Image (tube, rainbow, N blue to C red; front, side):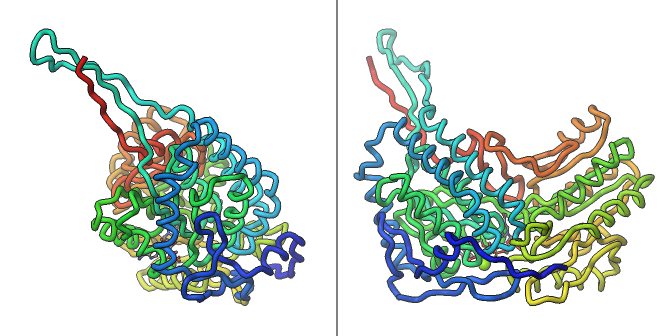
Length: 499
Ligand code: NAP
Ligand code: MG
């Protein structure tokens, strides 16, 4: 592993040297308690910044600002076209600052800068542009009614889609900027206002995004950003009686707490949670593509993807060949600090995640799994773990059932597609699935039987602003991206008039 220190760009050093504050009502303010917490570089474990630790008092202030921007501020009076233009302008600003944002993301999260440059930042830009276009296209219907009580009574009825109101958005650390964009895009396009709480591990790109939101000219209070811990800032946001909707991405465990917290005022809830996605390779697949795809499906973003292809099912006849191929890919991955331009896999995001992933590896080994490759922590100051392929695994093992959220895939052989389907669906999750075959009818037939929100065929991890993403079962409620996401940020009003 290479461990060279990388010189930060002047802009990033300057940005990091400031005392970070909260964005509330268009102003950068200190947290009510005056408390801060440290942010670490996962490649070294060193502290890179201190950010304000928001708590319930700050959440109250932020919700108040969002409420007044929604109820009476200039935001509600903007035309939909003006709203769309602001979102587009934000996208332009992100694009202008692509290099700086990629560097910040890599430093804070640990991901390779080469990936942040071509995935995180451009996908955020794309999503914002896609949603900017929708701002002018949120339409209702006219509805023919069948209830004239007397022959001469006539009604005219139509529906309007109105913004749901003030939205609390709680996001994770795996794609910090992109998750902020996925959440903000549809909220802003539909005319909602937002209180955003980034993950404690990765608040920096959201804070830079806050500066760019101000620069784009969003009215005060439309987007408020409160950094803080889940328990002290996230929980009061999810429970707040004046918040109309909470949108959450993160663990299924916390997702359930969000649902409970939201019950107080029955606010709307959307959840994008964990996954344990099956990735299925048939012997009639193009094996070179399938092996590369299987490796990418689990090792992309160090396996810290809710959609990661973490359960690999391979047709018996080609099992050894595929496992060997994926193991070879794993061996060739250049692991190192994200900011090193050659790095292909960085550290895990935190020491907590490192312990969690290593704990799963130990659990797998103690239950009889063997590592075809990897299986160990990489000794270093940072939170590095080897890309790992586990074989000798059984469906009932913890490593097959639970989300590891690290670069660890379990591989198992199967004989017949019919016996495979119950195994593939044997999970509390239902986020994504992959199928590799050159037999089209087999691919479509299997796609229809998998209980998953996304099925990729002969590809994996293809994300597009227009393609809805979300989970069956305990992988979540609702969808992100596409026009499906917009509906979840609106209320439908039916208007009926007697003519
Ligand atoms: P997490 O605890 O679910 O955190 C996600 C977000 O929720 C963070 O902003 C977190 O804040 C906040 N949060 C935590 N407790 C909360 C509460 N009681 N009320 C409201 N908000 C709360 O996830 P994590 O601890 O970072 O990671 C643990 C596991 O979550 C991972 O191993 C993985 O299984 C899953 N995960 C899934 C995704 C995904 O994209 N679906 C992303 C990340 C993690 P703080 O971070 O500030 O505590
Ligand atoms: Mg946490």
